[in-house]
Length: 300
Image (cartoon, rainbow, N blue to C red; front, side, top):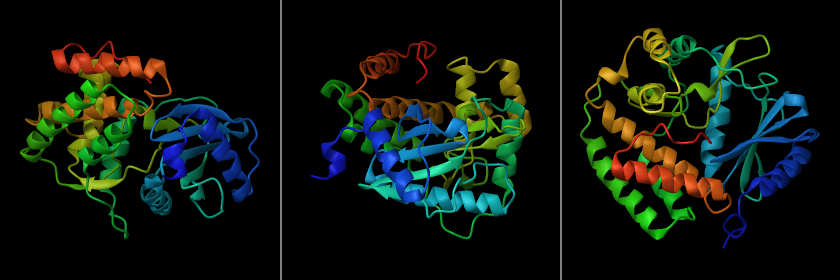
């Protein structure tokens, strides 16, 4: 059994790993503040001038190495995205956990407008692809990995596993209409932040893959119609900025359901350490079972 399997990945464990990684990278771990805990633990340091990401498991290492390569590619293309914060070799690996350091964008989380998001995504999709290879989008692999580790009820795990199998079959039958290519993989308002000068930049670059462009459009659409996190006007601005309304595509509801499943399994990773997360997972699963409104889902 590895260290990663023996030790729960909670905020204290992640911070300890971060402090050790700072020593290896020649950085001073001042003013550490946790921002969120998911596939990575994300911390703000040094008054927000540096943001660090600590991978939950050693199996995150390939995607983090790809993230560093993507960051360098986008910088070379002068695309407005997250920039690496140190010349030290990245990622820094501590007991198998990959750790990266990024330039902070602002004192707080100030988000881009939805029109800016659509324009930035169109520009991203229009770039010449990188010289290095990107993996193919395989959303159900991530579902399987998360459910294999999640501390949730056996009944809940069985339901989500069955739902994943049903959606995987439907996903295979989708008729995508946009040309495939490189994707951000997790494009949503939380990943397009303003820098200190107010300019929007795309962050969280570890999910880059190749696949149907509809995948990068789906979250903003569902944040509007399933969750009410965007207004009708904000969503219209996004669709206009990109030049395509994914909600009018025949496969939209299937792709939306896949994304909802990923939202539940993402949160399930914290169920063993956070009672609030465990309760929220069960609440979300009940709405998936019943077809109820997603607007009661609490943000995490």
